[in-house]
Image (tube, rainbow, N blue to C red; front, side):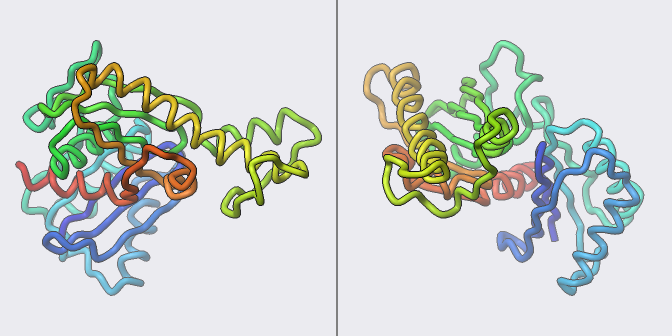
Length: 262
């Protein structure tokens, strides 16, 4: 089995693959204070509940944007899994995946590992010009050419950050749940007005920014596909006209693909 680990700022998403099949997937909060031993205890419990023996795990690939947790995960894997691995732990970075994608940015080492993994996964599926929108702590727009070049993109505050800012900075604005839509675009009460602003507002933002990127990425009108991933992608996709597909498992699929390239 292959254990895939995507450490994000808010959540850590892990998956277990048996061959090409994803047989287990977990989403936990990313606690920057967690130690290697605590990680081992937590995942031992999760594996036990799923009826999985850690001795069945013969490969691990890790992508992280949280340096302290990356160090804890590397230590955890070396202490508790290394005896069973067929290949050394694969840690994703611009250097370790240089053969999979050309990074055409000013400072390749600055690009988050998750963004590169998403770019590789999407390009291997569609092999055309792409915009990959990841709805996480931040919302990232990643641009990939038809020649598998990572060109850069745009970064903006995520939905949870925006909602937190509204409720903490404006005394009369409450914390709200945007999983249920407003009745109409024009909110007749504060909660519906906030929901409208987030859902329709971010949908319009996605459409507008994607169109501007399209003009830059495809000046001659070349084909372009827009896909979305991340924990909140399913909330915004219905309010966007340009998102063609939502793939919540894009990063895990990309990690699986990268591991088997080596």
